[in-house]
Amino acid sequence: MANPVDPIQQHTGEPEREHRPRVLKGGTVITGIQNSEIAVMLRNQHAGGAELKIPLEARVPDRFLLYVPLDGVAYRCEIRWRRKDRVGVQFTGTEPKPKLHYG
Image (cartoon, rainbow, N blue to C red; front, top):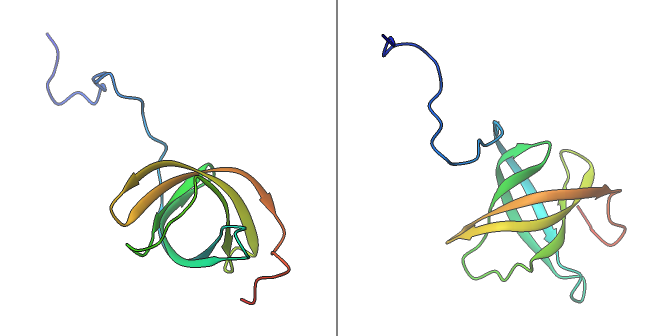
């Protein structure tokens, strides 16, 4: 008979998510459209991606550069999901600090 307190995980049919450490970092979405920049906050981040809080009025393209001054790097990103003022992104690569960014 199985012990109900046993930590054996039950399969729910949903893919398991990688642990996403919470962070509170400022970042800039660089869209490439006339060097347009959108200030964002990173809410969580892991090796493969992040969750961003964006201004409600912002129009963020499906692919962009995300410059994070604290990391000193720009991440190439693809949006995986959108919900109100949040977007989930997957990192597809990195680049050095963009030359046109003032931060």
